[in-house]
Amino acid sequence: MQSKNEKGYIALISIIIITAVILVIGISINLSGVNEIQMSISENQSQESFSVAEAGISEAMIRLKRDSEYLGGDLNIGNGSCNIEVISGGSNQTITATSIVNDLIRKIETVVELNGNNLTIISWKEIY
Image (cartoon, rainbow, N blue to C red):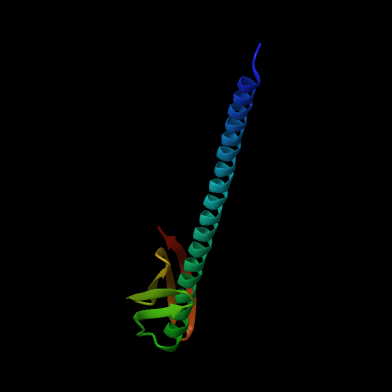
């Protein structure tokens, strides 16, 4: 038969084991939530960087309509920056916009045809 002390030790060890298991489960759930938040923030910043690159393409098209000799430049848009390069190939112009938002880089290349003040998009793609 077990004495009161032995029963107390068994109860204490049981409580410690149950507490440790609950603690491990709690930490696992917490870390999972932190990872989800980090992934969400990264996705939002990536989308913001993509939007900045799109804005750079739009800005370049507006400037090309005004000045067919436009070669590009740097823009600060929101929390990001965008480098625009325009390469002329006859009536076709290749516009490359590279944006950076919090170290996340997105790059878009668009080919447009410029006839006077008319601008037609020939192709549009994201470069990985």
